[in-house]
Structure formats: structure tokens, C-alpha cells
Length: 189
Image 1: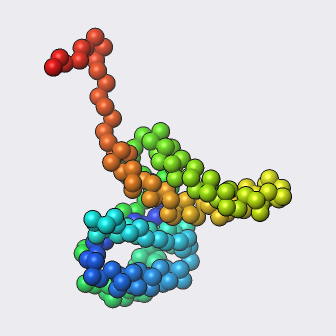
Image 2: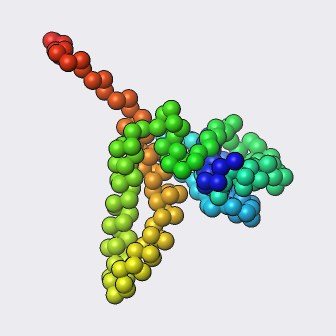
Image 3: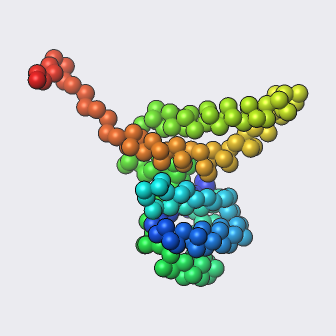
């Protein structure tokens, strides 16, 4: 078993008329998971207006703590209470950056991953500094950075970077253009 943090991502399709019931059920599940050792947090990304697939994220300190929650009687009972709220879920387990960018066989190039992270990080950091910069200005640099990273890291990890990668999914997963052979000419029209 790995000692790295593990993220379980679950996609569930929920009809609009069951949305309130689903959200109440999900909050119950998050509270149950929070009682388990190794729980690091969870979140949900709602679908765009034309879709019905919710993305849920549960993060644990390592595979063994996630496994303890996954195989617990309380989680089993919670899943049974949710029966009928959604279609069969699709689950994906990921370690480290895999949690944001998919499995090794589908992971985009590092430069695309960097762009997606930066596109999430820059506006959030800018907003934080515009809102809180004046109050933090008199603090020593190390303390300012400590406070900003303590506030922003969970937001980035659980909400903004997953949102960025979801919004950029088509671009991130687009195949690289084929390189032309040396001496080849472009086709004429």
C-alpha cells in the first residue's frame, strides 16, 4: 500500500428533480467520511447546465485509510440509503497529480498540466491579494506567505484546479499534432 495521499473520484448522474435529495445524501456521506482517520477532505463539482453528471472527490492520507472508509459498514449503509438517487457510479482512484490529470495512459503533457494549474492559480492568488493584501501588508513576508498558502492550498486542491482541468479537458486530452516528415510538403488544395 502507498503512503501517498489518495483521491477517490466518483462520477454520478443525477436527475434534476432529485438534486436536493442527492445533495443532502452527499453531505451525510461527507460527514461520515470526516469521522474516519486519514480523511483529508471532500468536495463536489456540479455539472454544467446541460449535463447531469456530478463529480465527487474524497481524499484520504493513504490507501489504507481510504480502504478502511470504503469497506466500512457506515459507508455501505450510506450507499444503500442513496440507492435510486443516481445511476451506477463510475469510480477512479488517483495518487498525487493523477488526481487532477487522469491515469498515466491518458495524462496530458507536463506543459499542459502546468498551464491548467497556472490558469487556476493566478486569478485566485490575485483575488486573494487584492482582498486581503492590505490587511497582511504589515506582516513579515514569511508570515504573509504562510497565511496565503494555508488559505489557498485547500481551495486550489479541492476546487479550482479540478475545475480548471474539467473546463480545459478537451484541450488537455487533445492528441498532439503529428510532426511532418523532413522534406514533406503540405498537401495542395
